[in-house]
Amino acid sequence: MKKIVLIVIIFLTISLMGCAAPDLEPSQAVVFGMDTVMTVTAYGKNSDQAVLLCETEVARLDALFSTTNDMSDVFILNRDGTHTVDDSTTELIEIANDISQKTNGDFDITIYPMVLAYGFTKGTYTVPNDQKVANLLESVGYQKITQDQNTVSLDDGVKIDLGAIAKGYLSDNLIEILKQHDVTSAMMSLGGNVAVLGEKPDGSLWRVGIEDPNNVEKYLAVAELSDSFVVTSGSYRRFFELNGKTYHHIIDPKTGRPADSGLLSVTVVSNNGALADALSTAFFVMGLDDALDAAKNFDGVEVVFVTDQQEIIATKGLEQKLFPVEDSGYSLEFIQ
Ligand code: AMP
Ligand code: MG
Image (cartoon, rainbow, N blue to C red; front, top):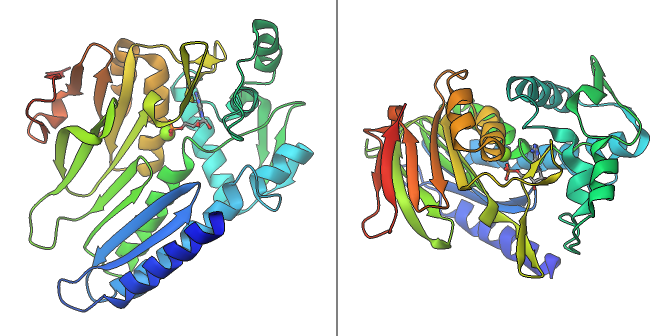
C-alpha cells in the first residue's frame, strides 16, 4: 500500500514539475515526509531548481529525525542513550530545549515514552494505568538531556520525539532555500504547518484557513498574510476512542495524560517556523489563560485559539488579518 502511495506521489511530483514554466506558472512538489504529504509551490525564474532542493531537504531531515528509521539520529540516540548527531539535529534539540525552558516544560521532547505508551506510533492504542504513567513520567523532563556540542546524551530511560517541532524547523529551512534562489513568492503546506513567502504573484495576500476541528473539510476563519509561518496543533489531528472516551496525541508532560485544557486547536502565527510549531503544542497544553500570558514573552507571536465552547479567540495583532467564515457557528473575539 505504502509503495503504491509513494509511486503515485512520485508520479504526481514529476508531472507537476513538468508543468513549470517561467511566467506565472508555479513549480510544485508533492512529497511524502515525516508521515505526511507535503506540498511546496513556488513562483519565479529559479523556482524549479529551488523546489527540487526543497525535496532533498525534506528527505534529509526526515532521515535524521525519524523515530522509527533505525539509521536516524533520533533512533540511534534513543537506542544507545548517547550519539554524536548531525549539525541540524544538534541545532533542533537546542532550540527545543530552549523553548521547553521558556514554556515551563509544557513543550518537552522527552515526552516520547508517554507517546509510545498510548500506542500513537504504531496505531495499537492502549491507555496506560496511573502506576505506569507515574513510572514513565520519571523519564520525562528536558533537563535529562545533555549536549556537548554535537554529542547528545540522555539519562536512563529517556527517549526523545521531535514530532512537535520538526516540521516547523523543516519549513524554516525550506523558506531559506527558496529565498537563496531568489524565489519571492511561495507557499508550503507540511501537515498542520503552513508557510508563505512574500505575497501571491498577483500581489495579493496569501489566504490560510483555520480548520474546523469538528470537520476538517471546513474552515472557521481565514488569515490573510505574507511572509509568515502558520502552525496548528489540535486534539482532532490524531486521537483514538476507548470505552466512550477520546484520547488525543498532545500530552501534558506534568500529568502524562492528553492535555485537557478546554481547547480544540491552537494556531500560532510567527516569522519563525520551529518556534510556531513548538508553541502551538505548548499553548495547547497550557490552555487559554496561561497561553495568553506566555505568548507575551515571545516577540511577534500571534495566536488563534479554538475552544470547546465554539469560540475563536485571537490575539489583537491579527485583528486586520483574520476573518471569520460565515455561518461557522463560532464566535470570533480579539483580545490582549
Ligand atoms: P503537534 O502536532 O506539533 O502539536 O505535535 C504533537 C506531537 O508531538 C505528538 O504526536 C507527539 O509525538 C509529540 N508531543 C505530544 N505532546 C508533546 C509535548 N507536550 N511536547 C512536545 N511534544 C509532544
Ligand atoms: Mg507543534
